[in-house]
Every structure is written in structure tokens, then in C-alpha cells.
Amino acid sequence: MSTVAGSFPGGLVLNGHKKRSTETPIRKTPLSKKLILPLQQHIGAESIPIVSVGDKVLKGQKIAKADGHVSVYLHAPSSGTISAIDEQPIPHPSGLSALCITIETDGLDTWIEHHPIADYTQLSEHDIRQHVREAGIVGLGGAGFPSFIKLNPGVHHHVETLIINGVECEPYITCDDMLMRERADGILDGIEIINFALRVKHCVIAIEDNKPKAISTMELALAARPELIDTTIMAVPTRYPAGSEKQLIQVVTGKQVPSHGLPIDIGIVCHNVGTAYAIGRAIKHGEPLISRIVTVTGTDVKHAGNFETLFGTPMHELLAFCETTREPNAPFILGGPMMGYNLSGDNLPVTKTANCILVGVDAAAPAEKPLPCIRCGECATACPASLLPQQLYWYARDKDLEKTRQYNLFDCIECGCCSYVCPSKIPLVHYFRFAKTETMNQQLEAAKSDQARIRHENRLARQELEQQEKEERQRQRKLALAASQAAKQKQEQAAQSPSDGSES
Ligand code: SF4
Ligand code: SF4
Image 1 (cartoon, protein in one colour):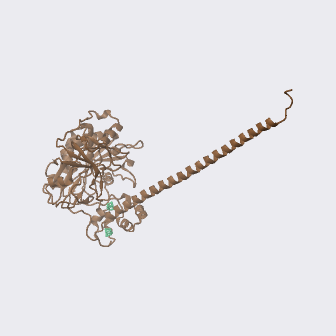
Image 2 (cartoon, protein in one colour):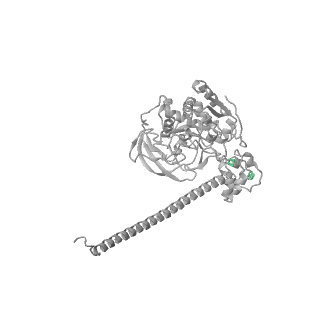
Image 3 (cartoon, rainbow, N blue to C red):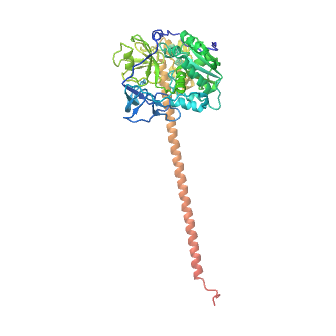
């Protein structure tokens, strides 16, 4: 076991509330009659449908293809018939709808033919990335970033350290903990492949020290894999948000990712344990990503636990399976109490990033009427990104976006520590999310108006060129006319001139 190399500022020691959902093994959520699959379940461009209404599909079959560079494929989680491709409510705080493919399942759950790769070391790095992309794999820690991109360090970087994130620091969430306890070998399969694809020198599997069973299971599994000689396990002190990428890098390596920089800039790549497991299944078993483990817990859940759930399963069916006392359409939290968000509605589907559903738990962000800021500085002390939340709050409230940028708003990881400790119950993170959205909208508008200006300037330049060409053509025509008139005149003059007598 390796030892921690550093620490991060601030953070909070929170009550984990993890016991209830780890008392039973992972269970399978029953197959739903209807699976609703949003085309956008990842960061980047939404996938494009490659099926039509009425088509029969098999479990694991591609139903939408990646569009552009930052995008992945989408697969049918079970066999059945495509019954709709239309707008459906999606699990997003905006409450908006988005384009989804709906499958009426046939109950047979018939798989496509699997194509496992017996020896992945025969593949090029590019081919491994392509397999991962076509398997629809995205970061399963909650971010949903297409994983194949993080398997490409680019020609100017090399990967010194791969960090496999098994920290799972947010209260209540235990899906990664249970995955490590029950499927350690599958995770190591994925780590082996990532190590190979990135030519990693050293890999650290980081796990919070409040998960002793996961640590011992992973240690045992690792000891049986001599090929993973450069992979070690590190027990990370339990402190929220140790699982956040930049904070984890500080703890594991003692290095700091520069502001506006990426981990790869300092030779580090991070993948979640669930993502590593999915990569192992895709390459070694030929299975695309069609399900995930979801923690369902909270005071209103009778059978709290972790549930392997097919994407597209309506959340209310999963909640019914766990026997909640929730009333139809009553709100619940998707994610943890610190970074999750309130949702309501019964037909919202489980997606690739849905790691936890909480029922009967209040979000940590203050809901009651906030009091004025008393400048106590508690928020700055708790901030793991060394920001000044109080200052950011003033500027965000005044919509002074330039100042929020100067105060490194985009280094805020929205962990909620500042809101949690604020004695005035100011929902600071809400202001920061708002300021980020406004800034991004402004940048989008600026980019749009830049494009419009460039288009306008190009049009003027084209019109000017056309005018110049037209004038040149007119000039050439005039010259040609003048030349032909001169020649004609010369001919006429020659015809009229008196004979020089040479004919006599
Ligand atoms: S914790 Fe709250 S009251 Fe204290 S300085 Fe920060 S914003 Fe103001
Ligand atoms: S939400 Fe942002 S500002 Fe607040 S503590 Fe976390 S990183 Fe710091």
C-alpha cells in the first residue's frame, strides 16, 4: 500500500450515512417494459439515432452513433422494439425535455453476439480508444466525460501516474464501494487495459479509509495479478471532497493542477473505478455500457442498497422496487446531498451518470431564507480550491462577471462546502452556478457575434472582389472593343488608300 503524498486545503469531515446501503449485495433492478434513452447522457454532442420507430433491436445493439469528436455511441439495454424517437422529460435540474429513443422491451433480454478481444496487447492505442468509444463508455463517477478522450494523452504528453478513483467521498453514495467489494477483478481488468493504452509508469488505486472492506478486497485481488506490478493501493483520509479530481491529485501525488490547466499537463490521468470496470467488460467481454450500479437510500427507502440498473429504466420503478414511502411525483435527490440536485416527476430515466437516488434526505445546500453575510470567513476556510467564496458571492450577486473571472470562478468545483458552513445560510453555490452559466452564455453570444462579424466582413470582401473582377472584365471588354475598332479602321483605311501602281 502506498502512502499519501499531500493534502488539500479546507474540506469537511461529514457523517457518511453509508452503512444502510452496504448491508446487502448488489441486486438487479427488474427489467422495465419501457426503456427511455436520452441521446445526450455524456458531456459533448448528443448521439445521432441509427434506428427508426418499429425496428427490432437486440440487447447491446448500437442505436445511436457518436456525433463529432466529443461524443459516444448509445446501445439498446435490452431486446425489443423501438416505439418512439421523440422529446421526453430527462433528469436535469432545468426540468427540460430532450430527444430520447424509447424501447418497448420483449422480456427475452436477447443479447447481440459478443466479440471479446482475447489479447488486447495486439491492438494499437487508437484501436483501444475506438473500442471504448463504440462501447459508449463515459466517466461513471458522475461527470459523464467520454472516456476514450482521457485515453489519449496527445503527442506532447506522457502519463507518469494513472489514478483510479475509488474515493466516493460524498455522503450516502456507495455504488463504487460495493463495486470494489464485489467486482475487484473486473476493475483490475480495466486498469490493465488503461495502463497499456496510456503507457502508464505507475498506477494508484485511491480509496477513502472509511471503506476497509473495499480496500482489503482490492488488495487481495491485486496480489493475485503479478502483471500489475506497478499498481498500488492508497488509503486516502476521509475528508470531503477528496474524490474531486484536483483535490485527489494533491492528496495522491502532492502536485497541484494549475488554474485553468488539466491533470495531463502535470502527467496525470484519473479514471473512476466504475469506468475502469466498464472498459474491462467492453474489451475483454465485448459488452457495451448498458447499465450501471445506482445507490438508492435515505430515510424513506425501506430496502436501501445498490442496484444494477439498465439505462432507461424509469426511476419510479427503481424506487418502487426498493419500497419507498415517497408519494407519486414527490421530489427526490439525484446524486449526493452536497452536489446532487432535486428532481420530481415519475418517468425520468436512469442514465449513465445517475450514481445515487436519495429519498427523504434534504440537500445540504440551505433552503431557508438566507441572512446577510457577516464576513466571518468560514466559507474561505472550508473551500478546497483556495477560493474566496464571500468575494465571489458579492460579485456574482452584482452580476459583475469580469470580477468573478478574476477571482477564479471557474476553479470552483461546486462542492458545496462553503454553503454548508455558512452561518447566514447563503446558498453560495447557486450564485456560482448562475455566474458560470451567465459567463458561458456571454461567451457563446460573443462567439456568435464574432462569427456574424466575420461572415459580414467576408461578404463585404467577396462583394468587393466581385466588383473589382466586374470592373476588370469591363475594362478588358473596352480594350478589346477599342482594339477591334482600331483594326477595322486600319483595314478600311487600307482599302480606301490609292493604288501604288504595282498592278500595271
Ligand atoms: S460563510 Fe457566509 S457569512 Fe461567513 S463570510 Fe462566507 S458568505 Fe459571509
Ligand atoms: S463550492 Fe466552490 S467556492 Fe464553494 S467551497 Fe466548493 S470550490 Fe470553494
